[in-house]
Amino acid sequence: MEITPLVWGITIAVTIAFFVYEFFAHVRKPHEPSIGESARWSAFYIGLALLFGVAIGIIPGWGWVYSGEYFAGYLTEKALSIDNLFVFLIVMTGFAVPKKYQQKVLMIGIVIALIMRGAFIAVGAALIENFSWIFYVFGALLLFLAYRQAFSHGESDPANGKFMQFVRRILPVSDEYNGDKLTVKKAGKRFVTPMLLVIVAIGFVDLIFAVDSIPAIYGLTNEAYIVFTANAFALMGLRQLYFLIGGLLERLVYLAQGLAVILAFIGVKLVLHAMHVNELPFINGGEPMLWAPEIPIWFSLLFIAATIIVATVASLAKTRRDDARALATGTPTTTPEQKKEHS
Picture 1 (cartoon, one colour):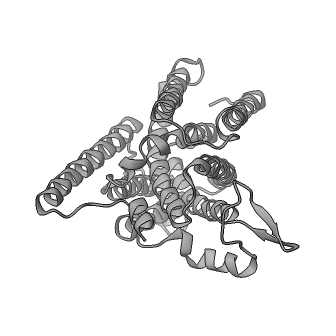
Picture 2 (tube, rainbow, N blue to C red):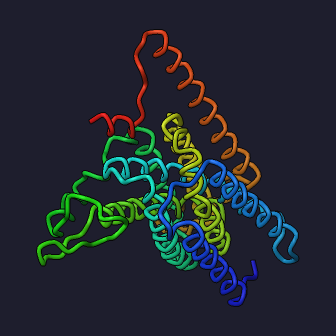
C-alpha cells in the first residue's frame, strides 16, 4: 500500500480526536453508562470500522485484497480485545472499583493499550522489513501463546499477582478510594489510591496482550497501516462494549479455546510463510521452500470468523445447560463480581 506521511498524520490525528472526544463527552464526569448509551456507541464504532474496511477496498491503489487483510485483522484484534475485557473485569472486581469510576479506568487502559500496540507495530514493521526469519519467531511465539491460552486461561489474578505485590511494596497505598483521584494526602503524607493501582495493573495486562495481538495480526498482513488501523478500530468502542456485554463475558466460557485455535492457525500460517521466503542458511541451504503453501487471506478471514461464531455459540449453549442444571438442583450460579460482593 502507498501510505504517504500525510495519510499517516491524518489517521493518527483522527484516532486521537476520537479518544479526546470520548473523554470529554462521556468519561470526565463519573457515571455508569446505560445499556442504551453503550449499545448506540458500540454500534457506531463497529459500523465505522466496517465502513473503513470497505473504503480500503474501493480506494484506487489499495483494493479488496488489502480490505480482506484489514477485516481478518480487525476480527482477530476484536476477539483478542474482548478477551482483554474479561481480564479488565477480573482486575476491577479484584480491586472493587466502584461502577461509576470504571469508565475512567477503562478509558485510560484502552489508551495505554493503543500506545503500547503502536510501539510494538513500529518494532514489528522494522523487524519484518530487515529480517525475514522473524516470521519463524512470530510463528513459534503464537503457537506457544495458543497453548497457554487454551490451558492456562483464568488461572491467575492480575490484581493480586507478583507484579502488583511488588508495586504495593514500593508505593504507600491508601485503603480507600478517594473519588477518582490517583493520590491523596493523609497526615501530611502522600499516598496513592487503589485507583492508581488499578491503572498500573491494567497497563501491565495491556503489555502482555500486545505480545499476543501484534504477532497475530502480522501473520495476516505485512502492512503496518492495516495493523495500526485494525488495532485502533478494535479498541474504539471497547469501553462501551464492556458495559454492554459485561454480564455476557462470564458466559463466553470457550472464548479462550476459540482464541487459542485462531492464534495456532495464524502461527502455522506464519511458519509456512517463513518457509516460503526462507533465507536461513541452516534451513534448506538458505533457499526458499516454494512448495510450502501460502494460505490465502479469504480463507484466513472465513476461518477466523467461523471460529469466533462456533466458540460463541458453544459457550452460550453450555452456560444455558449449566443454568438449567443449576435451576433444577437448586444451586445458583454466581459471577466473579457477585462472589466478590458476597465475600
